[in-house]
Image 1 (spheres, rainbow, N blue to C red):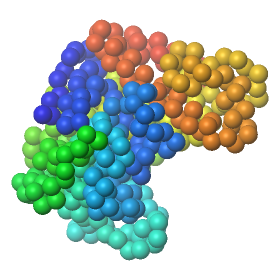
Image 2 (cartoon, protein in one colour):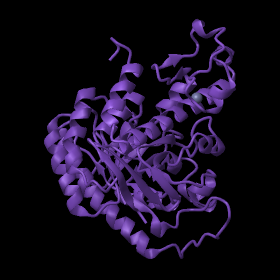
Image 3 (cartoon, protein in one colour):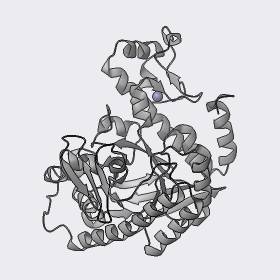
Image 4 (cartoon, protein in one colour):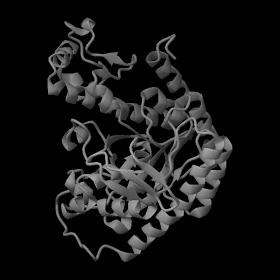
Length: 393
Ligand SMILES: [Zn+2]
C-alpha cells in the first residue's frame, strides 16, 4: 500500500514513487498548498492540468472553519474540495505556534485563540489526530511543537522532547482509530471523489530540533526506534534560520534517514531551495510561495523571478516563460499579463498562480529525469547558472 520504490540512485538524489490510496506520487514532488481546502485562485481542474498529484490542506484552518464535522458530513475532504488525487493534512502544530494571539503550551497540548472569531480553543496530539481522521486525507501528520529558527539548544531540546512524547500519543490514537474502522459513520460509495478509507490513512512523524545537528541526529534515531513509518517529515526549517544552517541539517540527516521512505521537507518552496534539498536527498515539498508570489505579480522563470508589473513588460509580446506549457504561457503575452495586474483584474492572479505552480512541478519533473539519468549534479549546476544571476546568490 505505502510503497516507496527507488527507481535510480545518483549522488545524493533519488527518484522514487510513493503509492497512496488515491494514487501514485512520483518524487521529487512539489505539493501545492490548499490551506483552507482550496489552493488560492486555482480549481481542481487547474491543478490537474498543471500536473499536481498531491495537495496539502491544513487541519487547524479546517478545524476552525468550517469544522471537521461539517467536512465529514459532506463526504470528507476529498469530496468536500472535489480532489480525487492524494491529499496530505498538516497537523496544525505549525499554525498554532505561529499565532501571535493567546497561546499556552502544556504537556497536554496547546491552548490558543481562533484567528476567525477569537474563541478559545485547544489542540492536543489526540485531537489533531482525530481531526485529521475525520478529514480523511491519505497522509496525516503528527502534532508537533515548533520553535523559531534561532531557538537556543535548551529551547529546541524541550520542543523536540515534547514532540517525541506527542508523537507516541498521536500514533496510539491513530492506531485506535484504525482499529475501530469506519463502521460508525460508514460513508456511502460514490463515483465522486471519495474519502480515504480511514483504515488506509497513514501517519507521518515530524522531526524537530532546530538547527542543532546533535538534536536532529538524536531525534531521527528515536523516531525510527518508535516505528516503521511510511514517510518522515523534517519540520522546523524555513522558519527564519540562515540558509546554510538549513542545508547543514539536511546534509546531517541524509545518510541517517531510511532510503526507502519519502522525506518531506515542510514549508520549503522556492525553486533554488528545492534544487538544494533534492541534492541532499529530500523527496517532498510544500510551500505557499508559488501562489502567494503569483498573486503579487512575481513569476518564476528559468532566468530567475520576474515582476510582471514592471514597465518593461508593457508591450512585450513574449510569453512569461517560453519553455513552459501551462495555459498562461501558451495563451497570453507578458504585455497582457502586465495589463491585468495594473488594472487589478482577478484573472491575472489566477494566471500567475497557475504558472508558478506549473513551474515548480516541471522543476520537480526535471530533477526526477536528471536523477534517473545519473546526471543530477551536472543538471543542478547548469540550472543554477541560469536561474541564479551572478551577484544575487
Ligand atoms: Zn507557464
